[in-house]
Each structure stands twice: as C-alpha cells, then as structure tokens.
Length: 162
Image 1 (tube, rainbow, N blue to C red):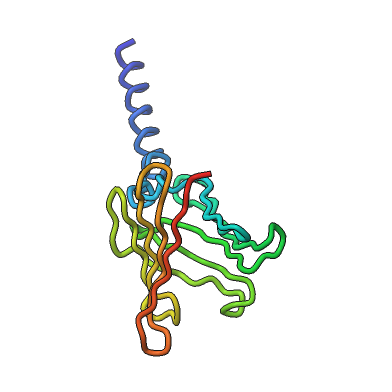
Image 2: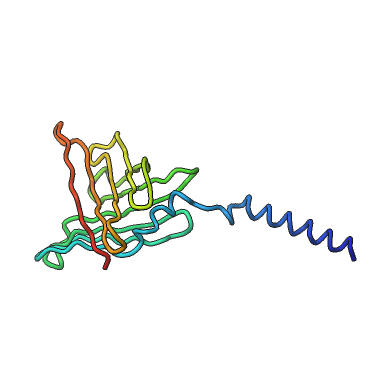
C-alpha cells in the first residue's frame, strides 16, 4: 500500500510539472496590466462617435476594434487591434484598412503601471507612440503622438465606459 501511494504521488508530481512546462499555469503579467481597459469605450459628440471595444481572446491575447462614425452611419475610420504577450514582451498590433498595404504595425510596450500603458514604434511614420491612461474605472485617455512634417504632433481621445 505504501509503495502504491509513493507511485501515485510521483506520477502526480510528474503530471503537475508537465502541465507547468506546457504553459497551463503560465501567467502573462504584462498583459494583465491592460486588463482595466477590457470592455466598450466611447467618445460621443453631437454628430459623431469614436468607440473602442476590447475583449479577452485568451490568456495571452486581447483583441480590439475601433471605429469613428459620423451621423450614425458614415464610417470615417476603422482599425483592428491586438495586445499579445509573447516571450515576456507585450505588443500592440494594429491593422488599418487602406493603410500600410493592409499589413499590421506593431508597437512594443515601453512603460506600464496600474494606470498607464505606453507602446512605441520609432520606425513607424505616425504615430510612433500610443498611450492609454486610466483616469478612473469608467474613463480613460488614449493618445497617439509622433512627428508629422518635422513637428511633434499628438491627438488625445477621452473615452467613457459604455
């Protein structure tokens, strides 16, 4: 009986170790810093709406969609976004129709804390920097910035949780 218990315990330890090595218990600490902006966010004016929606795809990827719509039907801008943690790095990957030959552009996280995420790609034309700042649980400020025609330009987008 004692030998069976030792054998069962040894097999259990092997299975636990194998599961950890296969990534079943792996944590994605950098992606977890972005958990606060999961959900729907909107910026409304009298004739337009800018919205972002973020969803958890799996433990290492969040996906997002962004739309700028005027007069409830005229889409002026759209993009898809992905936050993916791979090999200890968090990247924001953005694809915009009719831009960059439909190829995604990556921005690597360069700074993060509980209320701020900064992604940068100095090789991209504009923007080179994307910042998300948590104002409170129901509002955030997104900002894109970089050089345009030799001058530093930034655009800020305040959002409220929908």
